[in-house]
Structures are given as structure tokens and as C-alpha cells.
Image (cartoon, rainbow, N blue to C red; front, side, top):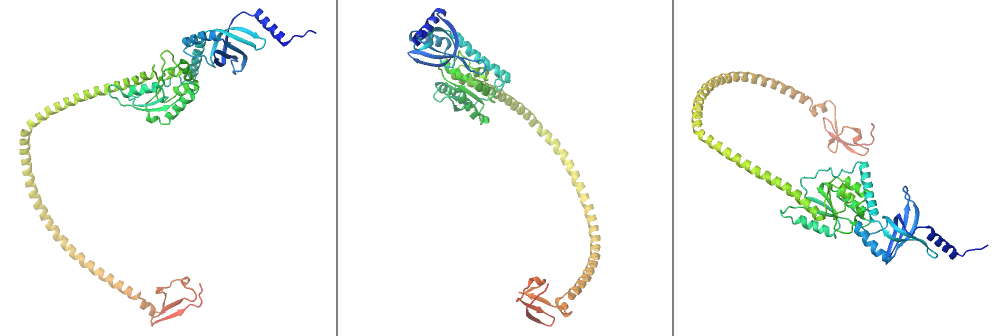
Length: 433
């Protein structure tokens, strides 16, 4: 039996592949890992459409001379840097080395495929939001007429945050704004959780804010991937305050740009939007103030004119009223004099009659009271203690207090007994209830 060495077998595999396969293929795959060390090394995978399990895997490399062309071309076309997690379409050469085994040499890339995948991802999120019925919820919130209290979600070190505050606080008309930074990570893998956490902190003090502004400065378009998140989009769409986004890219719209109440291009533009909104309200107030001033001036003029006309009529009216009231006063005086005399005569007659009745009533009342007093005196004499003692009764005291209950004494207590003829003391030797 003739046996092959492993090297010979691997060489046979290499020759077979070279003879039977085309020189290059376009391949769709996901980058699972990527590292650059002069050359670019990748691990490509294909996953199941459902479940996400890996069904195929291959090593791939972009040699330095091709990487120098592919990298800038991809970034210019997509605005993003090649990174793990991206869906890509690569032109590859199938290679097999006796020592290193199977791998793919990448010779070209199609950026439009990756752009399409990003767009598909965003459309999938928007479709999910539409199915949940929340896609336009934040857009439908009315903007408060006064946008003075601004909750800002950004990074404290971001240049865009500084530009926003400078633009807002140095407006030409001196409009006052209250702002507070709710710090969040604005790029990288932590964007989703960080911004959602900031929204949750704002939600705990909703009554203190009129609007939320999410801003960041410039940067690579790839940094925007964190804003294409279903969880973040759900939080923004359902947030109870209007949200204004100024992510800092004119060309690219993230998912939260599309579902937020208002999308502007830059942090400075967000500040300008707020200033313009307040200027419109200020113009309305100034117009109302001018109209109110004009109306009040007109009313004052009209009332002053009417007052002058009335003042001219007062002397004539006063004379007429004075004459009429003097006649009425004279009649009232005469009537009061006659009425007073009649009342006095009637009062005198009434007083005489009352005096007679009072004399008779008083005598009868005094006689009745004398009899009642004599009866009470007789009863009091009968109830006098001395009278009761003479009937054979006695009074027993202890400590100067009359005893009424046998339970008030005990054996050995000294008591005092009073009879009609005198008093004596005793000592308790026994008692019975």
C-alpha cells in the first residue's frame, strides 16, 4: 500500500484547488474579528438567518500593498472604518498552504454593499418602531412655547457641547436659558446604554425641563453606529419631552435623528434652533405689549375726554339735586316733628299703665316669696343635725370626715361618735359588712 505524507496530501489539495477553482470570487460575509499589523487579518463568518449560529468560517488577509488601497477607499465611500460586526462583500483568492492551511487573500471590497447593509439595519429598526406604533410619538409632541430649561445629553469634553453652550449663552438678544449636562458616552460600544441612562435620569425630573437636546461634535461616521440602536430608538420615540438631535453629521441620518422631534445638523444649529424659537415668542410678546400700550393709551384718552364732559355737567346737576333734596328734607323734618309728638303722648300713657300693673304684680310676687321662705325655713329647721340627733340618731367621723361606708374603716382605727348629748371616741375591734 502506497501512503502519502501529510505534506504531499496538502500539496495535492492545493494543486486541486488551483486547477479547479477560478482565480477570484466575490464573497458576502461578516467580519467577526479584525486586527491590523501592517497587513490586515480578518476572521470571516456566515451566520444563520434565524438564531445567529455560525455556519461557515474562514481566515482572510489583506496584504499591506492592497490594504493601503482598500482602507482609504472604503472609508471615503462609506465614512466608516472597517470593523468587526460589519457585513462586507470582498473579492478573494482561495489559497491553500501546506503548512498554514486554507485562507482567503482579499484583493478588493465593494463599499456599496456595506452601505446597503447599514441602510437595511436602520430600515429594520424603523419597521419595528412602526409595528410597535411609536415611530412618530416624539415628533407629535407639541413644543412648549417657552424653551428655556434645556436638558443636554453629551460628553463634557466634546467640542460640540462647548460650541452649543457658547452659542446659546451669547445670543444677540440676551435671551436667558437654563441648561444642565447629563453626561453620556457619545461614541463606541457604550453609546446605547449611556444615553438611555441619561434619559432615565432626566425622566425622574420631567417637571424641571422643557426639552432634551442630544449633541456631539464631529468624528468618524463609524462612531454613529451606537445611535442606530433599537433600544435607544424606543426610548427616544417614547420619551415624554421633545428631543432635539444635533449629532454633528450633515450627510448621515441616524435612527434617532429620524424619530426625534427635531433633527438639526450640528450642536451649534441646535442652539440656533432654540434661540430662534425663543426669538419668535419674544417677538409675539413685544407685539402684544405694543398693542396693549396703544390700547391703554386710547382708553385713557377716551375716559379723560368723557370725564371732562361729565365735570362740565356737575355744577348744573348739583344745583338741581340740592333744591330737590332741600324740599324733601323740609318735608321730612315736619313729618318727624309731628310723629315724635304722637309717639311721646303714646309712651306717657303706656308708662302710666305699666306702672300700675308693676305695683300690683310686685305686691303679689313679694307675698308669694314670703310664704315660700317661711316654708323653706320650717323644712330647714326639721333637717337641722341637732334635730336629727335628738331623734336618737348619731354621726360617726374619722379624721373629721363623716363615715358613710363600713369599708372606709379597718380594725384598730379610732373613730369619733356624736350624740345629741355629747361626743365620745371608740376603737374598731371588728367590723361586718
